[in-house]
Length: 369
Image 1 (cartoon, rainbow, N blue to C red):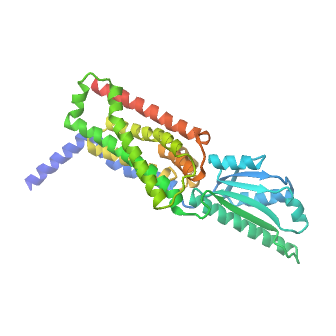
Image 2: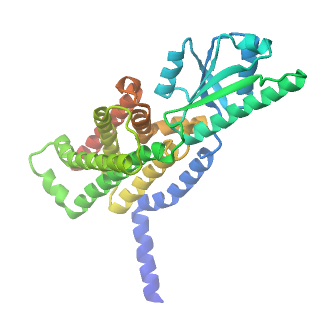
């Protein structure tokens, strides 16, 4: 019994000395449960929507109000042309476009079928399924109401023509495979970098490099370049599997995809290097890595649509590099868009890289000073 008590005493003393590890063990589940409990929603509402109303009539406004009152569509933009609608959907600014033809009011007044076109960004299945089902329901309910009011009416008053773009058949692999690629790169860059550098520090090999005539930023570059190469190898393998096995189309420029991926890889490496400078051992590095990985998977839009999350969580997800990379890779692979549409995402990843690397170098200099 005395031996067991002695071991327990040593363990508690060790835990007292290693306060960061104990704090992470207690805080990580609490923070993640509270955060994800509020953030994860499968019912998608308040979908950003653009309207191109060529009718500008009371009839079009009445039907548009029906879209608004469902709570599923938020009219965030108005367009002056069909091209404006397509550009906003391509950029990802909106997920749905509602287009009223010029003769909409006239056809309603004559008792003819009035058509309305609804364009839906189908790169996210949850958002597109919710938008398509709601739009079709609105058309049926409004038509039934008019038919009841106008006895003897034969034609269906409203014809809501929904057109899902980029993934019209709703094939899961088309939007999941590119996203999984981003998750794989995040896991590799963050975990392998953080734990690899900490392991070298524990073994003493990092100190051997420090005493050599080399600057801290040069040492950092030498450490991260092999991981960049590894990241590109992973991307190449994943793209080959996606195209050859799952028939995922690559509609955009493969060269642009590889170039823009560099910003994501360096941003993810910046997180890993910063963790390696904060952690004292591999256990702490692993715990910190998981604290980054779970939000990246659950809040970036990989599994659950960001449009369904509270506004606060949507802003919080902007602190995750994967959030911006998913827009880039899905945009190039599924939409076929180019760099001009992705400048905000690339700029965000560049800021991540510069800030994280600067913090890592500063922290590293402090350690060796």
